[in-house]
Image (cartoon, rainbow, N blue to C red; front, side, top):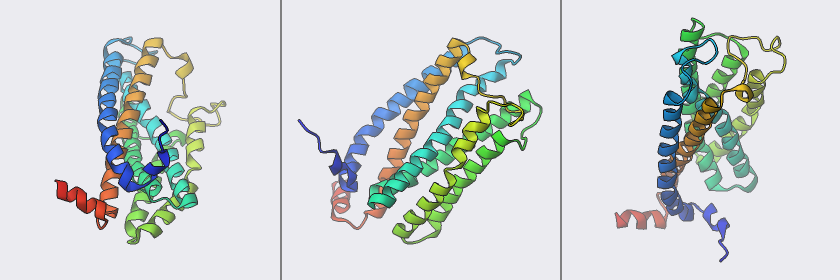
Length: 246
């Protein structure tokens, strides 16, 4: 049997599908996140290099930092798709992704600040790795603010999409600052990426937690997309029928 996936580009068709997918992603999010955190807290060494118990914050910090970057790319993807094909659902996805991405970016900065205070004795340092992550948060907030400031949804979608595309340049800068081959070029308190040298148990815990965060983001983005659909389609007949069934 052939499934016509193009029909789900319609908000009316996608709305019930999203409702069925949300519980699946949410269950996976709970299982994977709790499993990853349990593994990280109880199945990993007590000491990592010269650090003590506070190193375990990496299981949340790394997952949220990766989500912050990846979700921005996802947001730009949907925004560009909307600009090219003028698809309403693509813009709705972009709007929903922006909020989740901003939350993940804020979480990465918050956990990083706790790490910094405990490990380096400072909550913040204006180095490339921290500053670019803060700029990413401002870009998310700018996207949300610009979209909210324009009353017409179509104009708001296009304007915020252009802003998102311009801001995409920050993502490779963040990646390069953490994976810079020359430590002197990106000197900072923030340690360089060491995933290829990390202990196996710690790696398993990190990747499991990252997978859980991905599932959570999928679930929340779908929930927000459904809310946006109802808001924008509130005058349509199918929403009226949906309300009548409640």
